[in-house]
Length: 169
Image (cartoon, rainbow, N blue to C red; front, side, top):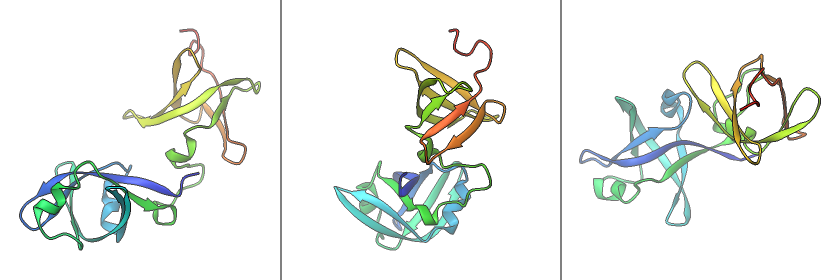
């Protein structure tokens, strides 16, 4: 399991006061308003950035960090990922998991037959989809209750119900 989760990516500077345009990568972009500090790998050095303020403009967060007060400093941080510690991540509800914890888990069917490994989980609008690498091909499983039967992080396995025709491609 990972200790940190990515919550955004700095895309550019905004204005003359040193705000950063941040593309949120979390399910809930408003959670950036609740975060006081983030971690960033800046030129190979792990750096703590203190958040002074957050406001939104369209799909971007405009974040003011206490450490920076000019657009040139922010421009040097383009494409830098921002992370939070696991303990500062959005709390999970019952039967929820962090996507980062699912990547790399073995996927087995109801007969305990190995199907493959999880390579990605992403939203599609109605629900999330889990990408499973089966070696010669990748298959997308809807991440819904009818398909995902059990997630066991301790054993590193996800048990799935294979919908008719899903593996026939």
